[in-house]
Image 1 (cartoon, rainbow, N blue to C red):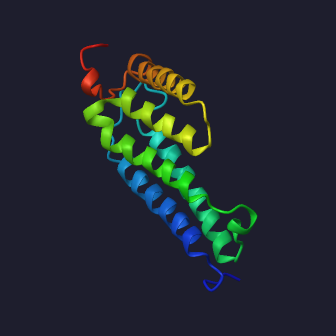
Image 2: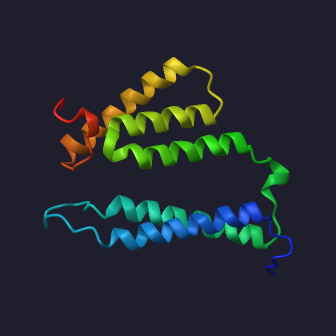
Length: 156
C-alpha cells in the first residue's frame, strides 16, 4: 500500500510539481479561443497534449514515490544538470517577449545541451539557432501562429 514514510522528498516534490504545472496548463488551455471551424487541430491541441503528458508523468512518479520506489538509488540526481535545465526553462520564460522566440529558445536549447554534458559549445549554439529559427518559421508561416519577435522585430 502507499506510504509517505518511504517517500523521497525531492522526488515527491518533482512529481507534485509536474502535476501542478500540468493542471495549470490544462486550466489555461481552455481559455484559448478556438480557431475557425475548418481547423483540424485547433490552438488548444498542443497545450492539452503537454498538460496530459505532465499529468500522466507526475501521477506515475507520485505512485512510485508513494510505493517506496527510490529512483535515486538507480541513478543519483545530478543537481548541476538539473539546475542547468531549470535555468534554461526560466531564461526562456523571462526572455520570450523582450528578446523574442528565436533568441529565447536558442538559449534554452543551448543550455539543455550543456545539461546533457555536451562539450561542443559552438556546434550546439549553431544547432540551437537553426532549430529555433526553423520552429519559429514553421509555427508563424506554416501554422499562422504569432510568436514574439522581440528585438528581431522587422527582420522577418
